[in-house]
Length: 144
Image (cartoon, rainbow, N blue to C red; front, top):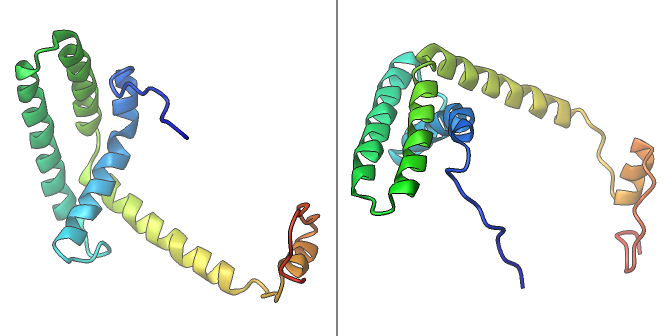
């Protein structure tokens, strides 16, 4: 049986700040997919609007914290929200657009690179090509 290690999402408000850019970009792109729009068609106008939506979301969460009975938890959550809001205020639509453009370029470069790699009919041959000793196996192998 496995179980998750105890996790406190509000332990360190810096985490919220560090994750805000990734959260913004991921949620912005998922929002496009939710309406069956492509993610590659986003532009700075889209990001401007989405950043405003994200700011409004943070405000709604901060406002809702006044109704949380556990005041210590609400305070820690509020600290994380404020840290995320501060970081969001530094993120520009141009930065989001640049990230998506560079990500797309990386994907294209990786596809070209991977397409140029030789193909092998077994893992043993691939390991040999890479100069890697194959891992020890306790059972049948692909070449068996």
